[in-house]
Image (cartoon, rainbow, N blue to C red; front, side, top):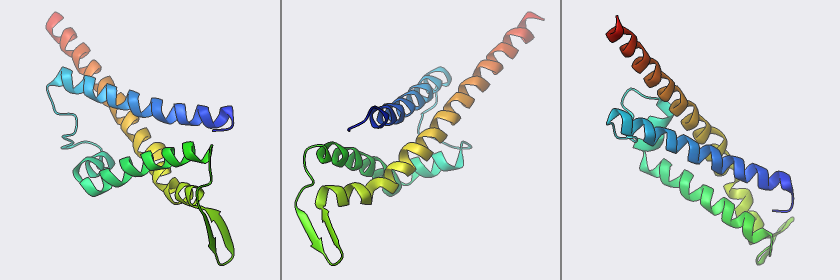
Length: 136
């Protein structure tokens, strides 16, 4: 984590993840639903929560990516002398898990945040409409 941009990017991905989950849990508490029960919800979130292999790959792979990013600050790890490629094990693992991190942080977390904002907005609009209906 050499630059401020890298630190900002990591903070942003963590922030999007936390806010998306918090809003979904808040929505679940208000509606009495289970936040991982995605019946009728977003296709990608249903796939994410219903497929344990995909969920594990994305969550664990994302954690491994960030662990390798942290370790790379201190060491390249053991060097692998492959034909035409001289690379440290930590850097190789970082490269290998980069697509997983991108899928988790740049796609699923953003979809989760969007869906949770949409759900809360819809709930709020429904509550406002109920209040107007009762007032009339």
